Length: 366
Image (cartoon, rainbow, N blue to C red; front, side, top):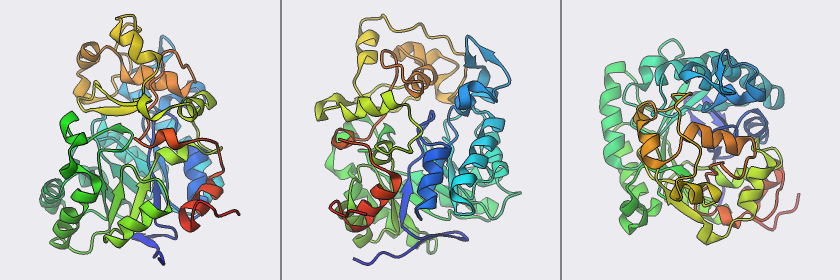
């Protein structure tokens, strides 16, 4: 089928594919810049930017970790990441993903606007006050992630007080990597699968104008993309498949974990964020079960639901520390997020080759 360009706010993305935001350090300048350069939408993750370039821009480190949310979500690092992203993709649109669960969420959103993000994407909670932090940046497009029509309706009603509506909506099903917008039970139930939650969201969006709907969660290839475009979506968001690229910012050991994973290795885990999270079962889960995991000491204060380490102690690990270990390639204690299809990654290819395959089919050879 012929694909139309994806229009979000004042921006046009030639290929209707959004690369999902992945922190810590999985989607920063190299990946996001390369994706935008190829005509899709690259997304910089704001999570853990204090670790960028070996914590070069973090103003205070404790035990070799960025101290507090001010340094874990480091503005100076984010500015440098966007500067380097622009060196790759020029003026092409680039987005920033900011988790609503982040401590200091509003400041991070404003930092991303100041750094040069054309769009802000927010999930891990309902960003009912998102426009409050972008009022000085009216050209920045705002894109919430939802898992139901009810969530979209609530966001739109709340945003009316800012005289604003979402510029696009990402609908994420329960096959995505990282944190889910569903309970453990719902992740397995048919009614909550992406194919079944899309239509009600599209219908609800019609009540608020012409809001582009973007499908996400478990999308793998051209056939999947075409299926959701035929259902009425304006585009798709994909994350895991971009880990399997040379340009992905993740450590080679991170990529190797996914390349070596079998289907049964990909599980839902408990998280200090209070939501199920999907990743590869590795040594980390074994040492958590054996009570031999590294001691939890909240240094980064990364997410509000964790309550400064209280929830981390309940589940047995600090998510900031374990994601940063994955970023540094430490297999023994790293937390390696992936979508449900991560086991299908078998070799690394370039971003250009991947986008060509997603556009023309798996057999396409550029």
